[in-house]
Length: 199
Image 1 (cartoon, rainbow, N blue to C red):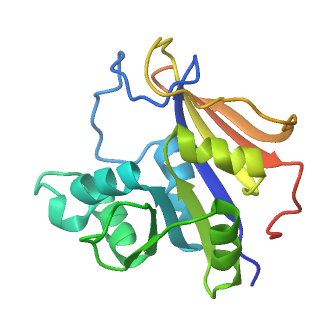
Image 2: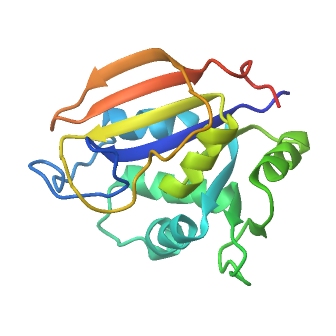
């Protein structure tokens, strides 16, 4: 089986990797919305590895592992936590010594080499879930087969930027676009630079 790599991006209209408050952003639901289903629920059966930067990994561990769940959290969030607990989690870090989370490992070094190693391993598809610095490297090196964006209806003006300097243009192919209840836009793009699932 050829492993496919998907990168997840969460960003404001001005390309910031932040999670600002806006009308509707703090509304809770008992059911997963379209964004959550596209990014996660629909991937539970085919994804076996999630790659994260250190900050993203620690944030997910401390918020979304099953042991961090609160009893009144929605059922779909417990399902998300069980998915995260069981998949192979790769934390990209030079400093972290211990993950403190089952089924997880630390990898360091050149990102392209790490991705090539993961693609050679047995398993299902891969999600890269990280902040702007990691996604910039993924885009710069053309490492993902496709990209899911959730674009929040906020011009934030501060925080880390997704878009940095590139030596060459990256042109993506739009697969789908939809607007969500609170003004977010959900975008799905495929890379034009790699054949789907290639290494």
